[in-house]
Image (cartoon, rainbow, N blue to C red; front, side, top):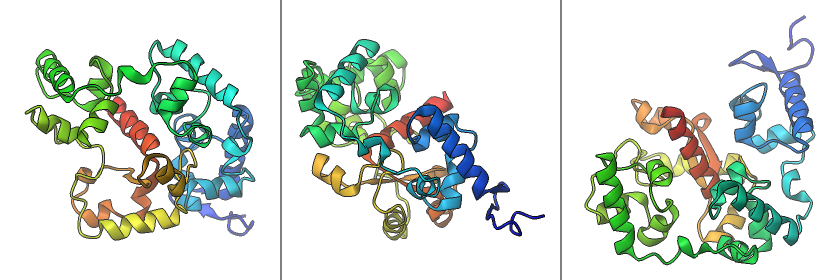
Length: 285
């Protein structure tokens, strides 16, 4: 008997039925004690998260189909004390002031409940007794000097991942001071690494990009497909909306129309976007 005859839809790209995908998702959620994030499913789940994305249209819809509340991770209001405890725990684990990306990748929670409880990430750090000033208010001259030092050490313009791994500072003070990684490189009189120098928005994605970007956001219901934060919540927290990420990089396509197909786009908040970009670079090295 075929799957269709049994009443189950099939994922035509891999032959996996909806029922099988839902079973695997529920079992993984039970193992974690909560609904998995998109990237967790992609890395550790029985099936890739992209299979769910293709079959159900978005990650929240896949979780809904499995009977999992897309916002279960934040439906219970996490207390301020629990959030502070998780920050202190992560600082001890990392041996440095944790960033939002550190919390999403290595911490007990995502960054989302911190923005519900605190006005900013810096305020959360201060409330936990952690000094955020090591990366705040750094003079541009000092940032440029560090970039140039690292360039001399590596013998080439560093990628922002190399900056994070080998430099004195993370990417964040550069984004605060210069607006983008490429602008930081330009201010330091360094050549832009065409493959890895762009974080968001500087690549020519083609004339249909604004329309496709908006369609992707609409399809994903203006919700980050990894952590679940909404476009409105991110705008309130940091003054900008959600990003739209290419699952397969634009430069790997011979045309912008293929690159900008909806199946190749996913909506992410800024923090999750940077984590995903970071993961992509790590997989290449």
